[in-house]
Image (cartoon, rainbow, N blue to C red; front, side):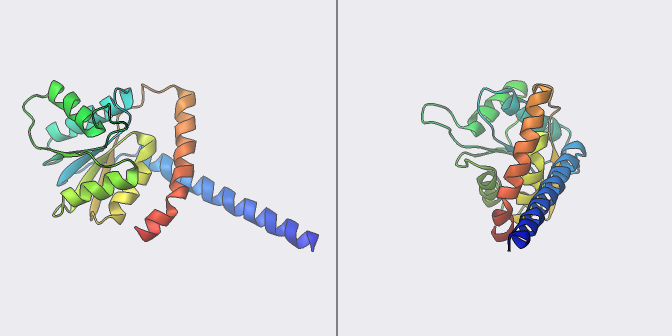
Length: 191
């Protein structure tokens, strides 16, 4: 009986290790091989306001828009607290500061997770068939899968160079994102 239990535990650990390493590999591949083609819209995913992450995501989305890669910018992110502006509002400030003439912007200010970012953005783009998702590189795999799952036929992705992170922070974020991907499996399956 004990031998069967020990074998079961070993099998379970091996399976968990396989799932974790496969997911980490997928996160790394998406992160390091951006895919950008002309799309109907560019969705920039939120992060904490007043951070290099949100500023650089905004600037990356703006760069793609100026390069003609998307017809509209969707800035997606809600308020963290009632005292702050929304993540989307902050992104709009960054974008208009750097390019005051851009007006083809949609604000999605109700989301508080990657799942909500994509789902709420899709609702604002009912006719969009293709999209470019912009986020930090370690976060792109989950966002890309969510976009595919929410009905975008073609999903492309890009992220800013992560020079604003220390190496140890990046290792942490890649590992954390791998765990988050695994935790999102029910959302991927059930939508």
